[in-house]
Length: 124
Image (cartoon, rainbow, N blue to C red; front, side, top):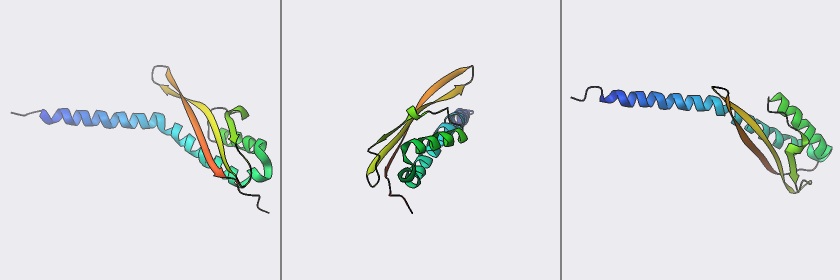
């Protein structure tokens, strides 16, 4: 009487899982890049900013972004608000990652990375 009724749900579940896996393979690396850059920004700000200043920190972050295989970044991608030692500071990086879909279609995904941190004084 209900022969084959369960097949629809199995097919639907397979399509749903397949779609999720496909989405993760497309968007996962983008979010991993964002996460890695955010962690690196926090680490460099915590350890290097007070000794080397903003320009050197930005240079180091651009080099790290190349290592992480992010799109090419320039100093214009970075901004710092209230960046002073012993003060809550907001350091941001804005860039665009291109996501390639089948059929030569792509999506330019804007990425905003923000780190709020109290920059510690230099360690001697």
